[in-house]
Length: 320
Image (cartoon, rainbow, N blue to C red; front, side, top):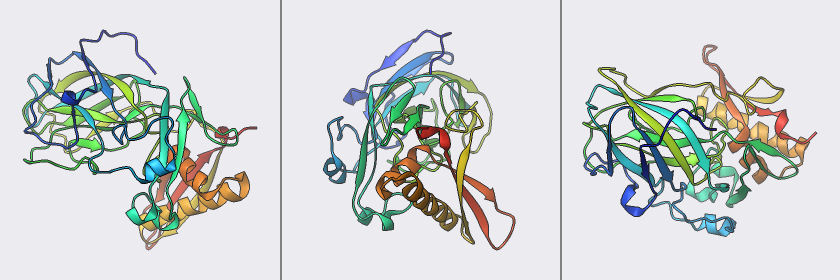
């Protein structure tokens, strides 16, 4: 996706001097910009180059997670002060032709269902202009976005990039696509914005712990909303809210429990059962497909003592 009514004012490569792996308001900015200026960020993949298009599942299983989420930045925005909102217009995303989706050995406790997958799993993707092929003719539409996008927090010291924060970070909101505008609370002078961990596609939930992770270029225009006084990030977006961006036929499985996380797990377990039984996928393949193309919805939280979560897979990803 691309917008055409802009000129790039600055470019930041993914060279080491422009990359950091922790949120820290003591980091010196690698670039200072005025509101209204456009920056093109080169972003490494979430595992910081440990995988290549030729990698296999053993490479993933042996990858180091300390640290992960290399972020390009921080960028100082002139005039940004605590209490403001940094306005980030996402203009364009460009992938580099490949990506990966995988899950780690269950003993690491990562993802939604680590107890059900003892061994790691991996799919390497060749990314086209609009889609990427999975297995058995399954095609996943691309909708690129930054998994991690945020400002430096007010609290001093280094902070892990894995959890999202009041100032943004690893939010994995798949609707932060080109044409969207993200509003990030400013907690330190200059905002100190960074981004990375880009995804070529993802289901709402990112259940196996990865979307289609991909090195990518992110182009954004910066603005300020003075004295916005927002507590956590907000956004304006046109989606996509389904795989195609339009209403389309879906197959859904429900999870019902008195605990929302357990209901979520049940919905995905039932979807994996469906994809294995009806679509012929292995359980590992089904888990990966759930992470890149299945959307989780909270269907109700008012009928105590049980809540309902529904998982939806678009029929359009399967061959006719």
